[in-house]
Image 1 (cartoon, one colour):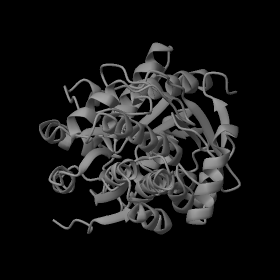
Image 2 (image 1 turned 180 degrees about the vertical axis):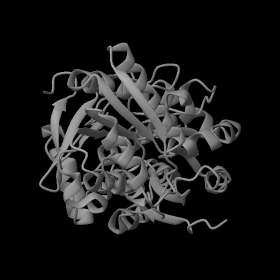
Image 3 (image 1 turned 30 degrees about the vertical axis):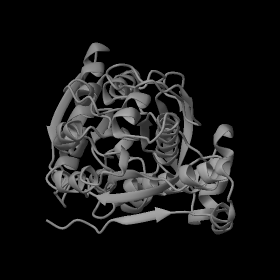
Length: 388
């Protein structure tokens, strides 16, 4: 079982460090002691494999938030980022989680990114007393399994699927729903199916393993079904491959996928066949949102690319966690238990939403947006409830 080596990110101002060393009075000595403390933030997500792009979108934003926090003169401590690659695979997630859980200096973790991976490690994070804030694990069951450590800053697939299904059934009373057999894909597809049926529509449902490389059979079935709309519950690369197969099969109905499909990897895999596809997502487009302007500028300057799906959510999750660490550190040395408690009491204004958690770990403020790919670019249409 291969795990990508841990990467540590620490930004330390040399001038500030020298100034602190030179201080000699008791008040400044106290400041030196406080500022010399180093706390770590973990990240668990896919940094390699087919779904790495989503993890990269997120970890870049986490990296930026840590760098910006370390640049503040009044932070009072230093932060390091420790990254652990779970490849988005539930089978590999326990080993990736163990890397973070066994480092006593890590006080909280951003992630896991994927629902299946989260389900596989939630209990072990509970046992380690290590709080989680996920930017993107959206399976509805995750907040019903008793995981005390799990929190997320995005709406669950049950809400996204409901609103996506409501949108689809208004366009067609006959909907074909396909999932990739993953925890995320099945959960999203289930919610869409329920909403379509509640809206008076009929659903044809099939599952296709995400490991398949040939979507021609399912694409032919969709084209022959007479369905006026299709929803795919799965991830970006596979959704893009499916889009190409659907175009080849001659399907002309409305096509939509969920948050897992919304990324540049979809566009790359689908090519021109991706144009016209819709994407439901409880996520913000930082490139157009006015409140994300500073984040967008800083992200692009650091990584030479625009922030993408779940980048702003990861940024907010990290800053919220840093706020919790700061609260914990005010009474002395921050601990996992104190940070855990502070996360539960958060009321942090982010660029994507107000981060305040319900007892279940769900974020209280939830909005689902609708996106569409046009001319090879995925753009925001607006709140799915009001989008045409």
